[in-house]
Amino acid sequence: MIVPFLTVTAIGLWTAFSRRGGRVSPGPIAGAGVVGAWLGFLTGAVAGGVVDLVLFGGFWPVLVGHVGAVAVSRLAVSNRARAALPG
Image (cartoon, rainbow, N blue to C red; front, side):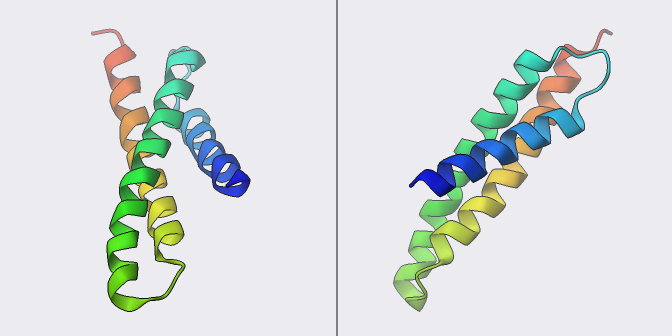
């Protein structure tokens, strides 16, 4: 369980710091990236688990979970950065 913890947290932080604008403070953006990554990973892992019950592959929860982590963390960071901009 240590590997998904490290990779999903790294995805959230990488997304946060690569998508953050210069005028936005890094704390809330990093939080949004990590929380979004974990929500996406958990949602994707559940969806992958359902697919895994049908196809019996064994790797679907991890694969779909990481794809979900990237997608939802990007969405969370973009929404948080947009909300933090003046105007």
